Length: 332
Image 1 (cartoon, one colour):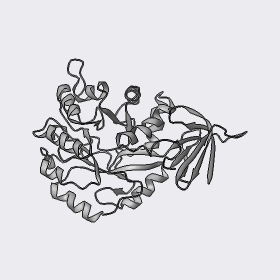
Image 2 (cartoon, helix red, strand yellow):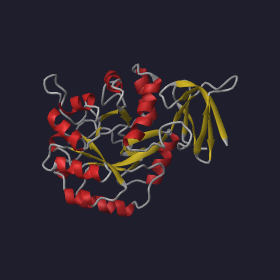
Image 3 (cartoon, helix red, strand yellow):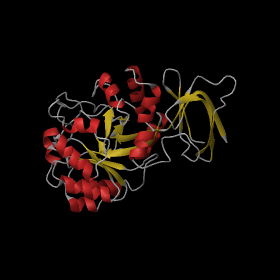
């Protein structure tokens, strides 16, 4: 049994209060209100949950060592994550699954970000690999795929949303020129997430809100925002998190891949803990930023055992010091 006292413990109701987290057998045994006479100046949160990880350090998801990726993420406070595969020819995905047959440490499902994306909103994705959805191919995906980002306005897009939702795959809308109305139609078909709001989509206009406007206004959609403070201005990150529905993602890539050869942004090199720090520096309350990196992404993935410190939940606990640096990752 492991007991972790702290001045601030993130509770399931989103509050931060003194307390002690008790871990036993890899699970949360209890969360006590008693933190002792002089608890350490720490903030305890559940392990962070990142829905979009393309790479970390010297490894990328397509070609790197997933075990090493998982260990590196855990050391940085991210204990649950989605290995994210960007756009390639369809045959490449079967080859990847064949060469990566085992789930990585902390993996909660593979995220296919493409290739069913709008070439006009390709971002870092090679446009030559982008194409309309292939529903027969999607229907044969392995169960390990738990999240798929696509552009719903493409031919067959709504059929793909319906098919994936029916098989239990979370559908995200992204790299898309969808209008507001097309985004709402996709939400009605089962889409539940918007991949990196404001990035790789039409700018939001007050007379044409588009996908970004749908993400921020429709309660069926959870906006995911890249939290590095570069892809989206920190003030706008604060506005997105202020909806009370958003999740933080890192969209991290391996070192050196942050910008494309022409200078455009690709992914980020931020950790999810770093994204929490960016949000807090922008004026977001710490508890709000932590929920956006823990319970809310866990809920998107249907994982009630993750992202919360309550009895029976998985015993991943991250301790932050007063400057919000990760100083300990415990699992009981």
